[in-house]
Length: 128
Image (cartoon, rainbow, N blue to C red; front, side, top):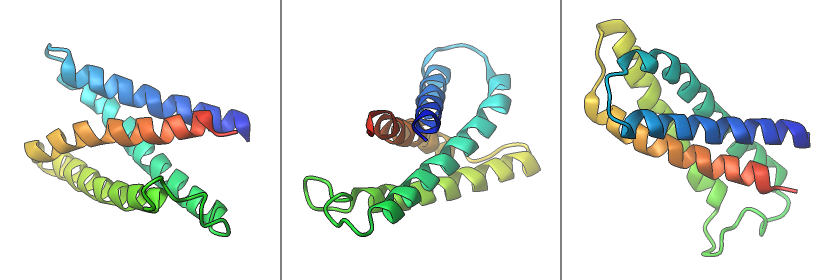
């Protein structure tokens, strides 16, 4: 189980780094989005699954899922991830059907998916 957590954590952080590099580094590499979009979809589903798994795992221990401010950290990230998943799949399917999605949605997604991936990946890698 520890090896699987490590593999998923490294995958999530790798997708985040690749996505940030694609967005930040200038150049005409639009064909790379064909390969990045499936990786982004997999990473969103993995973050949602991680939040659900942690919520179920720590449901009997109320303090394990609480952040320092008292908010249920995994629930907040779960609902945020579900919203990001809705935006991503809506825009991706629109792009596949019509040839172009909404640009402002991609801007939001390119900023939020790395944040979610690094959050979940770091928790998977540091968990004992």
